[in-house]
Length: 355
Image: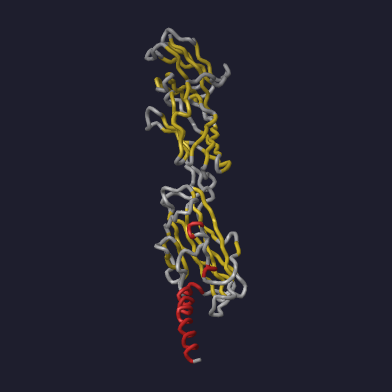
């Protein structure tokens, strides 16, 4: 009889050692993932695993992860009356290949297992009352478009055996973040001297988190940039931007830029075709067309007048006083010009033809 007890005692030694070892972390391959063959803590503990949702949380944005970025992952667990909690969590692609990328931020409660392809608890990290959580980092891969986190949790009753424990499984999937793009700009053209309000539509953009700077940039001259005087965010994917286009602007194609996204050549600056009407009482030029080098301008207010050619170059600048003014336009070559008259109450424009 003594020999039988001695033999039974010897059998219990490796069994007790297994219990002690698992209290300091999973042996690996027990996350419940496809890559682990669906194996969970039930490989050592009795019972059937129960699926839970929402136990894995991260700070990965809703639009997905960015390759090379590091994110915080938290595994939460809850079970009334649990004496201890243990876990294993892994990351895989859709076909079950391990993604790794884990790094430990709390070495007292968590550690790597399975060659760094999974995270598990330590001896100090298996304590808990009715709930607990573990947090660590994960760095997104460069060659995968989806990550699937899987975890198995053991809510142990603390009786020192493998019976009476409750096993849970949980998972969370994330897609690769699609690149932000600028889809359209409306209107796609405006005249020099105008201030159009542009509607910009993006995709995979996040404009509500930070209002981007909006500009138009000359395709032929990157130094010619006109930045929006106001930008209003309608949604993550819609902006309203007012661009003040001066008369000096070059006619041609412009790239529309909103933060980090752009559409090359999506906007055209055009010549002035519809100028503001101006009453004869406030500002009058004659003769128009002018062919004798002398232009008469009658104005009711003192004003600053600038004359531009159709390429936006300032050809003449002068100050007028209220009344009749005689202007020498002999320096102007034959062609069409834009006369900008600025007074205290605003600015008006008019065409001038020189022959």
